[in-house]
Length: 530
Image 1 (cartoon, rainbow, N blue to C red):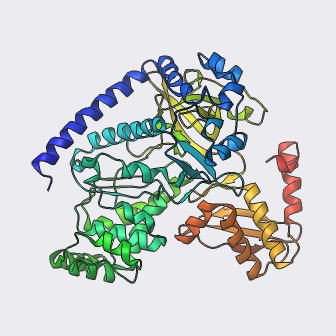
Image 2: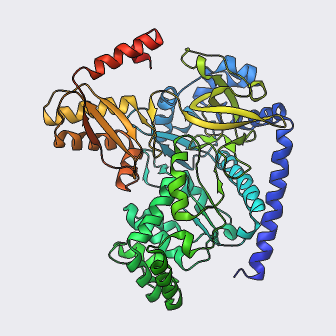
């Protein structure tokens, strides 16, 4: 139970969050002014950098000026500057005196991951969005307030750049620097992120949560929630024994130092162990829906993530699901304010937003629209300028506009632009697939076949390779390995069993040729334009 001091601290934090939320709502009533203030806040971070001087950013006063000074850009356009920052040359992209706390890593369109610079201002903007999200969510679910939270975050220092700057998951940095009163209610501990084996991470998190009155579970990917629940069920006998004895399995968590740190404070709880035994006997398995009094779960539900929701309820119960919003390593785009919908309001205080009509996205420098110029029912690519140092950056997430809240658009994430497949959050691109096939065939000394790679929904989902030529098991395994090399998110999801292994299907000899002809007839152009 929370102490009186914790209740007072929570009350103070709640009042501050309410102030932040009121300020956020006020910004929705005057989006142009709010966007102008954001631009004035982020420009000084980069104006006196090499990039800023080349772009004459000192002359920029508004979005119109910014459009003239800086063309729309992708990560590859910024990569030379970021590589220099990573090597220690911060003034390539940032003004003197700026600090880089870390690089947030995410999959790129090539085998090299993207490193997004994280400045103190960027962290403040990112955290503000989470605070707004959390306040509204808990206000709608007051029975979850001051109760334990099952929260999954990554490691913020998975490695260091050539210049010594850490890189990793921004979620880890946010969790580690969260207010103490909030961290008090996390059942997990930062050390969990340092366990290399996904099974060990899931097991440790569920073990620490089993003796708590968990009210809320939060992860980005719903597949992670499902896998955590499955892990607890598959290892239920060991987990229950750990609860009874106050231990943490040395077989699953085999790092003695991390196990000792994670096990601090664990106490034998034979009563809870007996209760878990009864729950497992009654249901035939051990599921979170049966051993916690949950109020809701929070995770992505938009795009392909919606396919996980039926399995999510199977494990976690028929609960409200709050989408965490369109949230990328490059910044937050939307904040959902209601349960059971992927639609959220544009976070107009976190970045300067522009939007490209999706039908114009292939143009070299397409026109962009401001938030107030979007049409309801239309689809757009997101462009943002944020405190990461990336200006007019093509995030290339496609959103649909569903209306407005005051002057701010309500948007739903649909998919990643370009030739990208993502059934478990891996964002696998066409170029990565082509490179993986090439490298796998070279490694085995076999010719490259004609092929189609397509996502398939199953439990877990997987990718199917379809070819008119026979494919050996060794080639299939080699392609799977190379996909993991090309895309670190694919590797992570394969390792944690959120993606199944690659499978093969033999096609009739003329299937691909007929597919090409059909596409040409339907679209009046070359098949490769699809």
